Amino acid sequence: MGQQSLIYSFVARGTLILAEHSDFTGNFTTIALQCLQKLPASNNKFIYNCDGHTFNFLVDNGFSNNLF
Image (cartoon, rainbow, N blue to C red):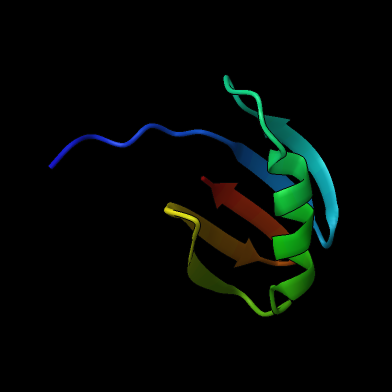
């Protein structure tokens, strides 16, 4: 099994992205905002698969953390 790279990461409060990082070029912020609008506000972990990418979300006390 090949090792996958971290492409994009962010921390948000609600739908406001507070910090983000990527060493790659892409429309990651746009995708992140679309995903944030669909996440429930409850504390939980979520995994979404889309277009061959895995999105890992952790929602805790209104803060969302993402690894993509």
